[in-house]
Length: 159
Image (cartoon, rainbow, N blue to C red; front, side, top):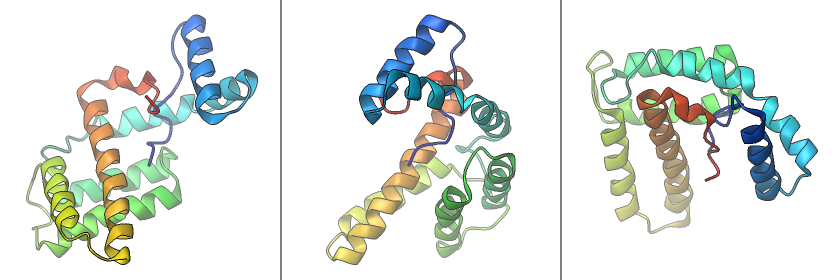
């Protein structure tokens, strides 16, 4: 899963052109189409950075995580579909019996959950669930990087 808008615009036109070339190579689209795609995420990137900068997923309560997701969805930084998938993280926290207002390192919590699922990866159903958990963990890792370094919003997430 990608964080919508994480590959927002760069300040100089040379970097935008190089980024457009990378997008074209990765997506198989022409440079013109890739440039248009890259520039269309500018507002989304700003919204994403604005919301996640208010939170720290290494010290967040389940209730605050839900609020962050709601703000991301309401601002358009993530789609309704992404919101639905990421809300599963909150359900996973609830399944562990975590207090809604007790802070935790969500990145560590979810890495542990993925590792536990990896050990149980026997059936096809478990495999599908495991892949979804890995996508959610990947998203959390990207958010952690973005929280540490807001300038990382300009980095192409395909790299």
